[in-house]
Image 1 (cartoon, one colour):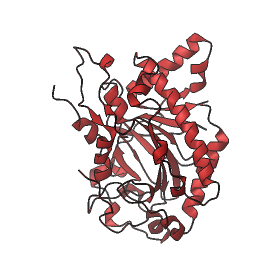
Image 2 (tube, helix red, strand yellow):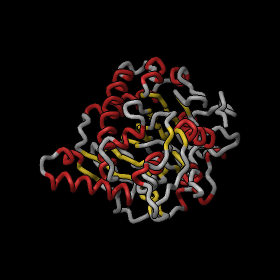
Image 3 (tube, helix red, strand yellow):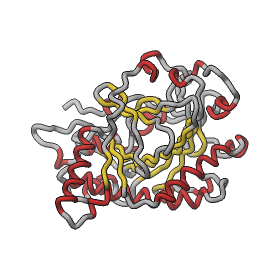
Length: 358
């Protein structure tokens, strides 16, 4: 399956549609009835994904440390999602990153178009995921960039305006890689492995990492569409910096959709498909989606921490037993992500298709 070099149809910028004053959305964005947010069952509005204070994993108090590890383990098993506070990343840096990307999306279209992307790498300014002609589209524009490995990092492909953007992205990316490294140790220990075993299965220091900044413009008919269709993340760990003012992320739980209420200065962490495979489904990636809003635009930053792209990923030997045989066939991340780049977000069909016949 080869990725296309160009989009199958002319690209329409959702922000331009939104700002044109339309009162009804084009047919391309209208989801089938069963997939619309208006007919989905909403769970108890008081329920939220767990919020965990990360600073306690560094505590000298063993009880505090163990309680935090257990909280993260429970969140991984029961939710596949959790929020972390006191994570060590500067709150000012978080605010600056949101702000600089809001400013980028406010720039004139012709400036943004200089960074227009294509489906062979997805790098740059985009408005669709997947290359199927005639596919239903999501109500979202985005900017996608590679951060790791260094051989793929090319700051000249990052926005030159606002002028602080490139410097901020570099600083933020380093902080995200550091934080993901800490989380990998936590997940590894919680799975009963040595603290570096999960990281080594990813390729040690030779990991992949990328950033997708999502911009969800105001939508005149938010009940008919989605900002991002249901999907699980194909990679390892995702760190999401959500919009601090407008909720939009929904997580699937018991066939219901729960709207995540972001805690102040928190990152939202979720388990990706590669951790599901490596853990032999002890931890599972979870479907999530994004709803849009008629009155407010929204920005979020998703940092994806992935295995080395050509490393074979399969259930870790220590997590395979007679009673729990390997559930997945081996596959490299490069091979794996071709699917989502062709099909776009499509539930959990990709990770489920890897299931072994043994």
